[in-house]
Amino acid sequence: MGLFLASLMLMGTTSAMAAKVGDTSVGIAFGGVSVDSTVTATNLTTGSSASAENTDNTTYEAFRVEKYYDYGRMGIELGHLNKKDGATADYFGVEYAYMVYNESIFTPFLGVLADYKRSEITDSSSTIDKSSYDYGLEIGAVIAITKAIDLEIGGRYLRSTLSYEDIQTVAVDPIKTSMDVDNVMQYYFGVNYNF
Image (cartoon, rainbow, N blue to C red; front, side, top):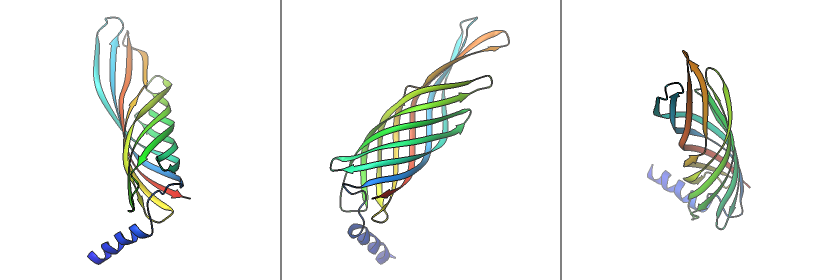
């Protein structure tokens, strides 16, 4: 067993290096998303209000195109957050990642990213379409499987500008509900084809 693992490691250092300078990469990514928000309900007749912290978890998938340079990787991403509790979103993002190039099959990275997101939020009485921006940091690693195929794992911490308000009548009182997204955590697994 030890000889087999040593052979794999040696093969990884001599025949395949993750994400080489000059490569262009296309790929897909799948992962989880955790959205932390603050929800406030205000009775517009009495002025009383209550707030609560909320966390929604869902999944997403994305298509990515990236280019590797001496100084790192630049890329774009088109993604879709799957519907959960009446909310879904599509986004377009850009990223820059500093790649820690080396002679092994593992290439760690640290990056920054920003995206434009179009969200649809549906509750019992209405549907709200909102645009927002997210920005933040990412960390991960690209792992070479062959000269042309890489796997990628990573995590992202994002701040968001998404917020919305809705007014509904409960019993006889109008209630204003507002939601402000505080931060978004993403974790993902991707497969990339390099050429």
